[in-house]
Amino acid sequence: MAEQEKEKKPRRSFGNVRKLPSGKFQASYIGRNGVRQPAPSPFKNERDAERWLLKVEVDLSSGAWQDEALGKVPFRQYASAYLIENEEIGERWEETCRRNMRLHMGDLLDMPLRSITPPVVRKWYSKARRGTGGRTSIAQSYRFLRAVMNAAVRDEAIVKNPCQIPGAGADKATERGIATPAQVDELIKAITPRYRAAVVVAAWCSLRRGEVCGLRTMDVDVVRQEVWVRKNWVELLESPRKFEKDPKTEAGKREVAVPPHVWPLIVAHSEEFAGPEYFFVGKNGHRMRGNALYQAFVRARKKVGLEISFHDLRHTGQSLAAASGASTIDLMKRAGQSTPAAAQRYIHAVDGRDKEVAKALSDIAANGSAAQLPRSIKIKP
Image (cartoon, rainbow, N blue to C red; front, top):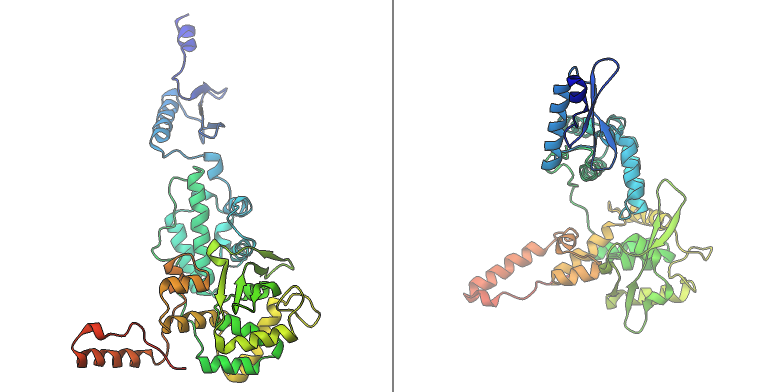
């Protein structure tokens, strides 16, 4: 009778312990996700089961609780859901992440989230760096892994993000090349006439290739001699899908003044090649494809002996603008950047500027006053 009364005695308020037919004890509790979660395995006695529940209760109160079921989900499955459900991820970045998963993250894909520990991450990262993958794609892969594991922390699948390698996600690319004004002029002369104005707005107005292809004829203001960036044209690399989208930030929507010395090229393009809707069109009259523009650029750069990418023309424009004395705010507006740090990434040293700086220092010494320092240093093309 006493034993029956003891058996009817209510359990602790947290969790539940029951005796199994085998004689062992099963502990379980309702997690913060609202789902009942059992202990990983039965306990030999009731006291051990109660102790396990006590530890879980402490973890819950301290924020160290983990969703055991979610922690067992393979990285591949969780990462794929993350890409689909995160509205801030664009289709181009999603495509990049899925390609990097396939090419560089194979060792992690089938591992449960909770098994991806700091040593596992270090081993994977070291192996990836020794492989044939480019440094940029490895840095992208690490940033993606870190973002997914941050989501796993928020979902309480794991307690702490295992990505703890300092600087691993930084894209430490080599210094990008820029062209001189004379080289830009050579490119303009060497490229097929239909694409000349595209080189102009990329090099002298700092537009991205997608922004160039996204220009409508109405976006070219012949009165104010400006181009208006309103849309970005996106062509996925591993999919035939193409679409138009807004710039990533509001700063990307902007008007950019065209330097007077190249405005005649914009006018000539408008009269001879521009379509009724799109400013840059192919021979078929449809919007110019980004790949067609790039291939024309590659042929032209080979003719003039340059080793730069089309995107480097944007770097060229920002660097020359900086050399002209443009402020960081000016550069941000011109390139459609939302932060000073983003604008600074596009500024490079211009050949000949150091000699101008040295001459300015001598002028200061001769005058005996720093007040004689010129407001800007002009670089002659």
